[in-house]
Structure formats: C-alpha cells, structure tokens
Image (cartoon, rainbow, N blue to C red; front, side, top):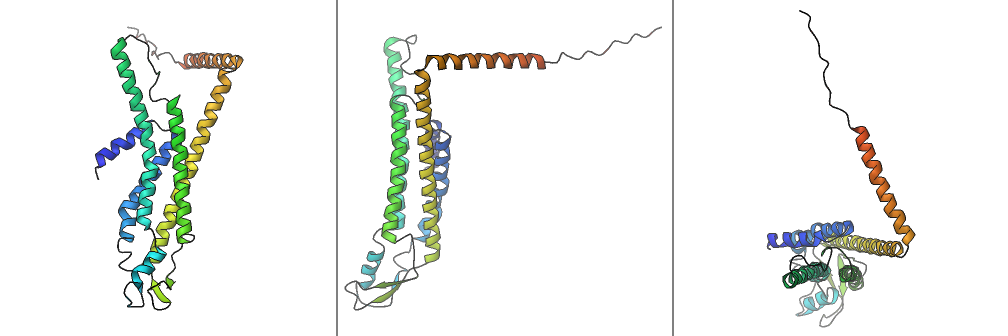
Length: 260
C-alpha cells in the first residue's frame, strides 16, 4: 500500500469537508480500514480450511460451508469500504474541475478578468449538490450492506455448532466454525462503526440543509441582511473600543534627583 498517496488523497478530501466529514473520515480510516487490513483479514484468512464437519463424504464440507457462508465477511467489507470511500473523491474531482476551468478562463481573458468562482472549494452551486449526493450515497451504501449482512448471517451471529443437511451429505451432520467468538466481536465492531458513520452522514446532511435554508431566508429578506450587517459593524466597533480601553501605557519609572 502506498501510504504517501493515501495521505495526499485523505488530505485532499479532508480539505473540502465539514467538521462532521472530518470525523467521518477519521473513523473510516482508523476504525474500519486499519482494523480491516491489520486484524480482520487474519481472523478470516483460514476460514474455510478450519471449517470442519463430522463426515468424510466428498463435497459435503464445501456444500455446507457455501450454504452457511455464501459471501465472505472480508469480501463483503472490502466492497463496502470501496463503495463508501469512492464518492468522497468526486468532491475532490469537482474542485479540480473548477480550478482547471478557472485557469483556462484566466488564460483566455487575462489575469485581470473577473473570476468564475469566488472560492473554488466553497460548497456552492454544483459542488454543493455533489457533496450532498455523496452523503446520501454513503449513508445508503452503509445501510444496504448492514441489511445484507444481517439477512445473510441472521443477526450477525456465529454459532459454535451448525447442523447441515445439504446434499450430498448422507444425513444431518455437525459442522464447527473456527474462532466463532472472535469473529462475532469483529463483526459487531464493524457494524457499530458503520452505524456511527451513517449517523455522522445524516448529521452532516442536516447541517448542510439547515445552513442552506438559513442562507435562503437571509437572502430573501433585505431587512434581515441590513440587521446582520449592522450587527457585524457594531461588533467590530465594540471590539475595537474594548481593545483600545485595555491598552496599558508603557511604564516609565519615576526619576530620582540626587542632591549633591
């Protein structure tokens, strides 16, 4: 893994995110990607090899394993992390598109021409919609994978003993999962972090929608704009008065005359 490339990529995504987005990115990188790479792959690495059934019937072992584990947790989480992290790159690509468009505009019309965007990284216009849609998509992906995991593995449970009667097994055989407690702990941990990420996405979505609604109300109300402008001016004047009043003149020691 190229950590320098990953660091640059994360810093680019982090630059255009809100406070909720930065917390979400930290949780995804530290508690999901790192746990997946460092620990989860080792826990499920020998999953099929250590899945044992008390029968020597050819094919019964593979059929029972495929019946109870149709999709590996590791591959399912890998797909989930890919689908969750890739939409954040759309915001970086949109900002790069704006910067390139601004550069070409200056090349055609000169450096003194008006700017197309006041701030290429500010979430306005199409960039705001891109950011909001990525939040909805990420929350939807996490919720979908949680449902799929819950549906396939029956409430994220790992029983120690599994009864299997699939063909070509001669009868009902007993099968045993390797390290079921450890796998259950990791599964619950990944589920909790996914739920936390969904909560942060919803909080960020509510924050952006509320901020946009407030801006629309202010822009459509001239009296409100005048009131806010006068409030800002009064605050600046009061701050300057306080600063001037708190200024202490330099201390000059009294002069002492010595009589000769």
